[in-house]
Length: 184
Image (cartoon, rainbow, N blue to C red; front, side, top):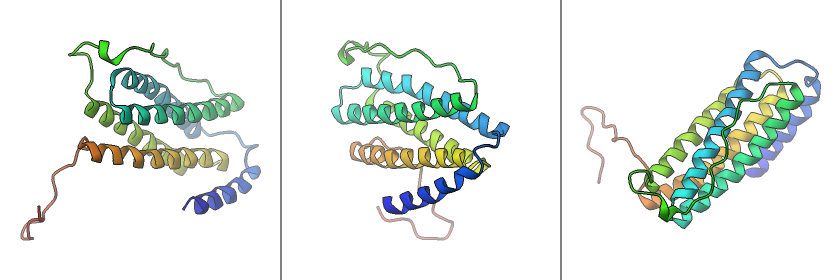
């Protein structure tokens, strides 16, 4: 499947030379600004999760998200600087701490950390999809398609861990009136 994505991305990249000289429209600027602000806020939340959990698998997935977020932040930051877009403020990094020294009542459970991360990923995927679909300039659309694809691939790994641990929140099943109840 990756080869298909690479082919699509290469095709779209070949079209970007046509419109990079066009100014960004206000929607593209706003999309960049909001997505970067979301990445900045997610960063400190992930850092807090890393500081809180003692679960090695959850910590590894949080560290993977941190690397992906850093990569996306850097690419978007560079793009925005190049285009002259004012950057959103970024919260300071969380200092490292020992998860065993976090007092009860403050410490989030692994279930909460994973579900909070999931919600942040979903939000960024939706933001990237909206930004890509609303972009006129191909380079902006491609940037957000890449971000969306990266977050979707990561979300799959997160969902696998959440299912394995029983952390995933599943809404009630819908059974239309008059139909048979689902099996166990």
